[in-house]
Image 1 (cartoon, helix red, strand yellow):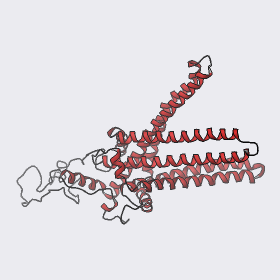
Image 2 (cartoon, rainbow, N blue to C red; image 1 turned 90 degrees about the vertical axis):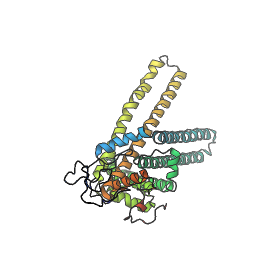
Image 3 (tube, rainbow, N blue to C red; image 1 turned 180 degrees about the horizontal axis):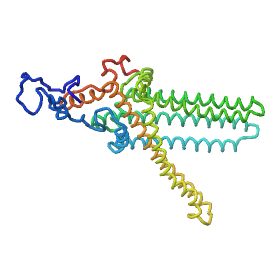
Image 4 (cartoon, one colour; image 1 turned 180 degrees about the vertical axis):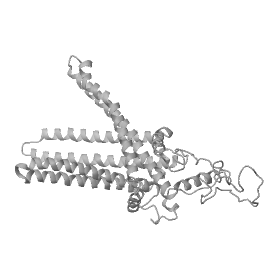
Amino acid sequence: MTNDSPWQSPGWQPSGNGDSSDPGGAPGASPGGYAPAPGQPAAGWTPPPKPGLIPLRPLDFGTILGGTFQVLRRNPRPTFGAALLINALVVIVTFGLTFGVSFWAVDRELRASADDLDAVSAGTVGLIILSGIIAVAVSLVAQAVLQGVIVLEVSRATLGEKLTLRALLARGRGRWWALIGWTALLSLVLIVALTVLVLLIAGMAVAAGPAGPFLAVGLGILGGLGFAVLAAWLWIKFALVPTAIMLERLPLGAAIRRGWTLVIGHFWRTFGILLLVTVMVQIASGVVSFPFQLAAGFGGALVNPAGDPTGSIALIIGSNVLLIAITVVIGAIGSVLLSSATALLYIDIRMRKEGLDLDLQRVVEERAAGLDPHDPYEAAARPDAPYGTPGGA
């Protein structure tokens, strides 16, 4: 910070005498050292404050990456604990639906007469599809809520606050359905695009005669690459939409426009950081889970050399339960890290584009002076906010 800052800390008083005899600094310099003495800019400068997770200045790559991992250590209960609970819930619901529907379907088909077998089979297929849709819906809702919790935690940790999971959920009241709606909308767009690609490939294979399979393979390769590019582009262009929904409390349409606008000029930086975090999580997941997968594959001959069926079944169940538990833990860590990196990128971009760091510093100083500062993240806190009254769904 320099003395060009357009604001002064609370309690700042200009000097009434320009010939101050104080040799320690310039007349009227603020106690925080933001106004350097004339002719000595370096002597009067102090680093931006760091009340919590990050220093209140535009962030470099190392600070974003370090802050991403620090979120897990700083307040683990509402971050890692919530992620672990939510991921475990998704696994339990998915497994319960899959196992329950499969068991019921097999039993129903075994009991069906020959005349009713076709109808029973059709009903079974429909039920399996329905259970899959329910499992996907539960997963989408769970991941949306988790991302919202992490975004709120990062925003408050930046100001030095440590909130409980209950407090974070309460702070996001009124925004959860908008966030879930956005997650469902983005997923629907990708599903529709993938469905169109599959139908085109199938149509090519059927309509092109003997050369159809070869053309379908070529179209599948090109289409798969195109779909991957589309998914990555959408991922980055709209990466900040959930953060805008939760922190600025914007209506869904305004949040989509806001997220798109913020990424302009920062696409490749956002892409690089989020891709790096994703790759790091995937590599760590593979390194941790590989020994257990290896043990599950070759451990049977060592633990049960006689080939006892009971022992083999117990080994299969035990190894799969262990692998699922490891997957849940790694998935929880990955979800927290990716959501944290996204939230920090949002804060950094707003610091660079809108001077959010000055707003955050002002809030810290007002709070230290015993005042009740506004929320620096909300759209209403920005005098140039074009989105009207926040809080719509």
